[in-house]
Length: 165
Image 1 (cartoon, rainbow, N blue to C red):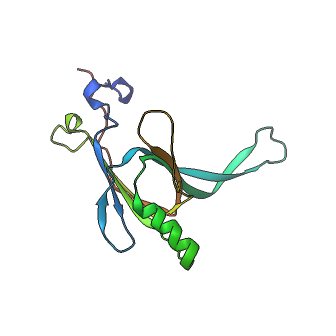
Image 2: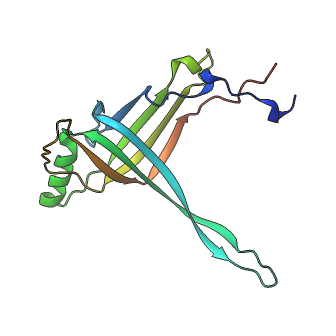
Image 3: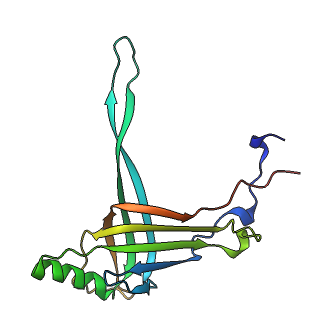
C-alpha cells in the first residue's frame, strides 16, 4: 500500500480539551493556567511579492515570521493586571513564557502519538480589562491578544496515520 492509503481512525483525532497550560512568570514561578477557556498561538510568514520579465505569475519570497495569539480567560488573572500596572508606573514591560501540552490518552497507544508540547517565549500582552460588569447572568470572561518572539517544539505528535489493512 502506498502512502495515500492511510485511514484516519476516530481515536487518532486529538481531543481539544485534554491538555495543560502553564505560565512561566518573570520571577521563574510556574503557574497552571486553569482560567483559560481557549487559547491559540500561530506563526504568520511575511512574504514579498516579485515578478520576472516574461512571466505572468507573481512569485513570493518568505522574508520573516511573526508570532501572535489570543486567549479567552475567565476574569480573575491578577498577573496580567500587575504587568500592565508595572508598565504604566515603572515603564517595565513584562514578558513571560506559555507552556502548552496537548495530551490525549486515547491516542497515545504506548508511543506518545497524542502528545504535543510547545512553548512560546517573550509573550507580550496587548492589554487586559480593568473591570467588567454585565446584566446578563453568566460568568465574566475576557479576550486577551498577545504577541510572542519565539517558540520551541519540545515534543511533536507522533503520526503517520495507521494504514488500512
